[in-house]
Image (tube, rainbow, N blue to C red; front, top):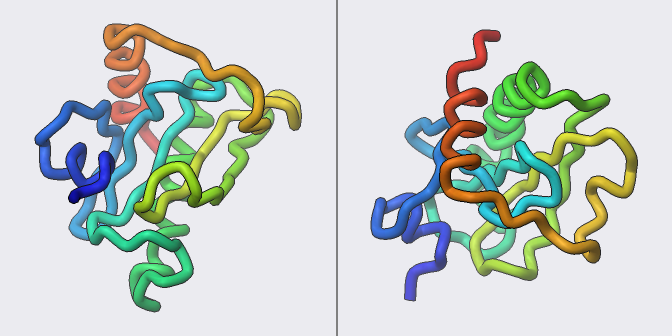
Length: 131
């Protein structure tokens, strides 16, 4: 069965996509730690990040860096933190999380529950950010 990320990538279920290329897609986490929390996902469904073929592993960070720069332009924060947990969805992904404090990237704290309209606005802001 396809992962929830593969279902978003295929358009089977909606996602608030902020960027996409031939190999990767970036979309908002629907239950973010903070607003602007983005997931960077390879289109090829592989469970573990370090099992990605070398070419994808080498190119995921430059793709993520572009998204992080855009997030930083539209979400007031000191930095964009990254995390690779890999246990919650069996599809490799990187979390990009706007940070004011280290606790902003604490995955054990309660997640936000923004409306679809709020996510739509945030996705548009990130997509439209000019580097």
